[in-house]
Picture 1 (tube, rainbow, N blue to C red):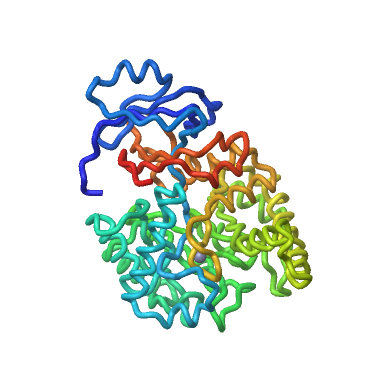
Picture 2: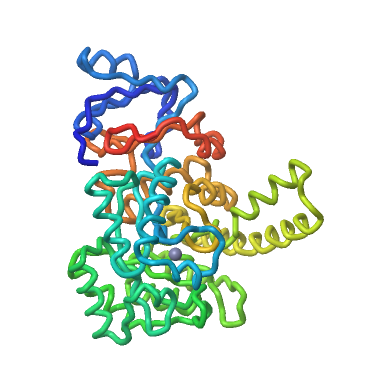
Length: 420
Ligand SMILES: [Zn+2]
């Protein structure tokens, strides 16, 4: 990242700029000092660039697009299926190494910007520092440091416990002082033992204290909200982005609430539904593979059916929410690191957005232009336009025609440097 990017012209058979324009054919991007100097019709760009400018031709099947953004990651966790208690029994040093591996996995999947949504102690900050020094490769990182949680609350193992408005304000100040780019707060319980995902863990006043203090420092806020009660609190408190948004009630089931969805729409809150995480999509993908290659046991098939039924319920809630809140406030997030959610698969979330009614082009925009806006970087990344940072990915085929093309990467450029 410290290297000075060279001048470069990248040509491909197709280009999707992420602004909503249709796919253009035979296109090129001229990169200078890590930013987009010009883009468009390949013969014109190639003529305008100096003869000495290096050229890369990715071929007629390749499709250039803006680098992908994953707004929800946990770099310090391995995503290898172990329970939280085991993952958090690792040393901070091992968590940093886990994070270094995960950063590379995401970068090689075309993800050029991430939010790191909460790690223990200084682990998240250390990873960002290492990345900035060029010690490790990885996506551009926005870091929350440690998630703010109540005593004994979800992710209390990260060591940023705060109860009551005063302690929450102090936590925000401490995190900003240590280098937090945004504030993550746990508004309901979650998968952490002893917490209740169906109940809110903070009052509106407590969440509002976090929002007020974060905004004072020009920092955005994201709240983990599984319980419906916590969704109500987050909207009322003015949280910028709501994670999960499951409409989970104390009976343990999802109960869609159109009135709440209406309030979410009116508030303009960003919503990250973390669909692959809830739907246990990596397991579904693997079981479907076994089924299609005739390797599945009867137990596998039964498991697949039960997972598909469970996912269907969640996707139904998502469709009903979309009818009210629309697609423009929805951002995908993988929740990579927790459970068996390995890094490198934002494609799963985008496939699930298509499943609930997005066009492939809209799904791609949600992970680029819309996500850039949700994390506050819309002036720098998210679209291919003159002056933007040259974060580019190239897929083998146009992903706006077939979303599965997102899984076939040809090249990744970060700030104008080819990293894959
Ligand atoms: Zn998470």
